[in-house]
Amino acid sequence: MSDPRSGKRRERLLKWLQDAYAMEQEAETMMKAMASRIENYAELAARIGQHVQETRQQSESLRQCIQSLGGSVPTAKGLFASLTAAMHAAGNSMMEDEVVKGIGLSFGFENTEIATYRALVVAAERAGATDIAAVCGQILQEEIAMARWLEDHQDVLVSAFLDRDETPGAEAKR
Ligand SMILES: [Fe+2]
Image 1 (cartoon, protein in one colour):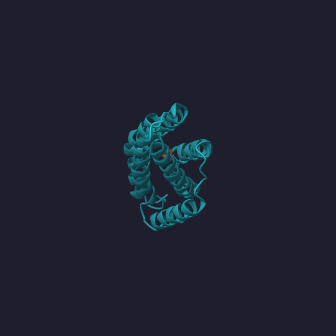
Image 2 (cartoon, protein in one colour):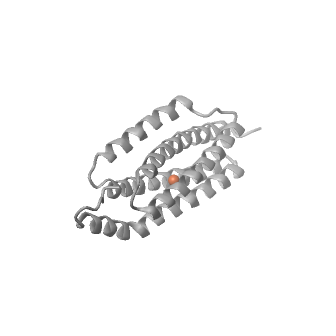
Image 3 (cartoon, rainbow, N blue to C red):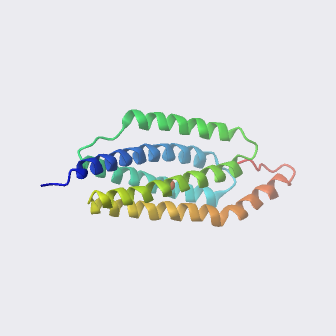
């Protein structure tokens, strides 16, 4: 006889995968808005652009995991998250130190993603879905790499902002 908890475990896993999918929609919207506005910080724009590509691939992998469990991707939730993200990005764009605030916002978001995928790996293993655990473990590594990059480059980017800010006629904001 099958374990009565297994249905519950798969249900939980599916729900968290759907939450992660919505989160990635939000991340993509936010990062695309940010990257398109950066004018003076090429290295940051390039790294964000790379992570946008990774994020698209992650969404696709999540979609496959969700469908393998018989679920569907959350469109309404994803749309709402995208709207929230667009508002976030727009609010940020009004700050005179947009790039500095954007780095902080991104660092926070990446760390939320890290916690999300750690939880997903645990839930997938409990549900006996080793293939999904592997997918989430791989995505987790990409999120850790992005968070680390932001951490490693924050000092240099903030200094670059302050250099421009102190230079008459130079645009520092983005
Ligand atoms: Fe990410």
